[in-house]
Image 1 (cartoon, one colour):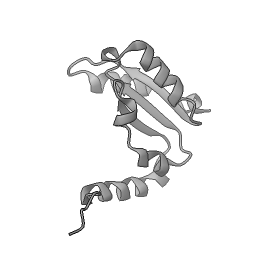
Image 2 (cartoon, helix red, strand yellow; image 1 turned 60 degrees about the horizontal axis):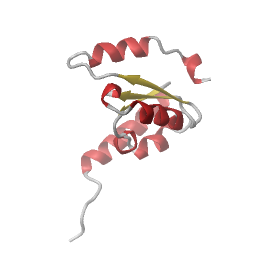
Image 3 (cartoon, one colour; image 1 turned 135 degrees about the vertical axis):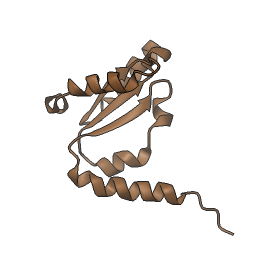
Image 4 (tube, one colour; image 1 turned 90 degrees about the vertical axis):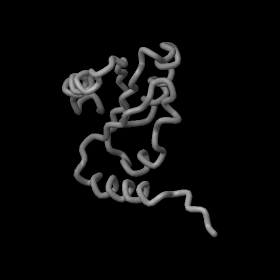
Length: 110
């Protein structure tokens, strides 16, 4: 019996993201600032190609400040990638995130 390591729901999500990319101007990827490498999906970089990407590091206030800054600098070395941090405040993530993205302009990616 073969072990299925790539479940059907993951394959379906991959196909949906792939189909949405031609209509997408900017990819917003939400990562946990405490574990940014582990919380990103490696397939997303492949799927987005050279489209601009905003990586939002959430719970930045719970992460080590120096490490968050180091990760921010590291992630922004990738062309077309910008990073913003968002602190964790229970119940207000959506509002904070909306305010952050409203201030974002495409000129930030050039």
